Length: 272
Image (cartoon, rainbow, N blue to C red):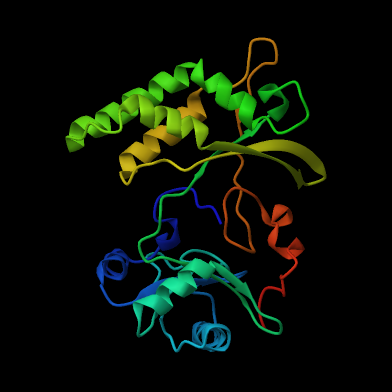
């Protein structure tokens, strides 16, 4: 599941609660429910359902703490999406985090995240994806090769040099960081059908090797502003229409594009 910014799992949660949930040392994790916001009507029912499902699937007793919204929203299935679950043992918490998702027959679909989430890998969505490559197959390898000859590689080197200067580190080099970033880049070709219009799109992902949010934002901005096509094929353009999935809460696709309902172990959104 892909969010659009660091700590997107805490979006619209009160600042004090966000800081506290991240800083505490007891075994814990974040839990979200498919198709539901954490502050939707019926909060108590959802917390109980989350606790019962965790016990049923993992055999672990969890106490789910209710999230509080910074700005109350009137519509359902909005941020914040996560509650916090506390368990007795770190190994149990890690086992549940590693599961990432469970979909229970006659029950809900739950998503699990660390209380200190990793930075997202989602960078951007582009339209006119045919400009990445004249071929119909996935353009990931072609774009990686193109990036090594493009100004985006120089941008990456500058970004990582700034981080290394700020942190006083020298290994690996900024050039190595840039090469690793390029090799970690992948592209997924998708199609969005919205209001009867079929729009081919390309979603770009990259696991940026940094813990610094400003470095992550700089790398993401480099992807979004670079020319990744050619003079012959033209260049893909950044897709700026909002995307948000009502099922998994991701922002790299809309509800109609979500892959979860087609997964073999999908059992539905929730127990109504």
